[in-house]
Image (tube, rainbow, N blue to C red; front, top):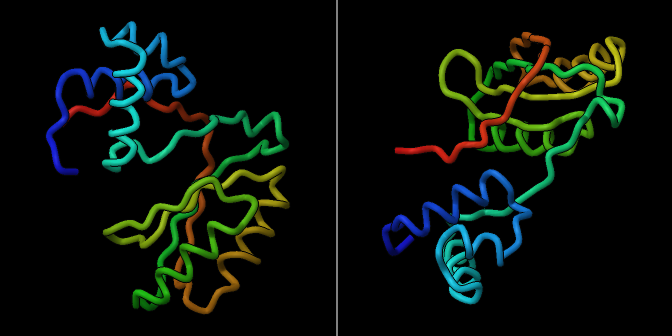
Length: 154
């Protein structure tokens, strides 16, 4: 990014972070801008790579994902190719919600959702422990999670 963010940019980002579906007209009113200026600002934040995209938050339970888990994975080898291949392969699995490449004792934290405990067991055996580069796996069940609606401040 080539320019520092000002208070108007931060207001726009904070509102979009809470509700990415807000109308441009409502966003402009909150930020004290005309709708055309607001749209231009948002487009500039996108072009500068500050806004990477927006998405939909799903209730995975309603889709049949009755169990969520975080799976810690340690690999026996740490080449860029092996790390990249593992990460990309995990992202293709229908059960995977997110993949975190980590520093520290574990290399990855894989967030998944599955229909039941048999599905959880099968996923771990087939997608993770069956891989030759995987050295250690530890699974923790997720009881609940919340996503922050506040824009981070640094």
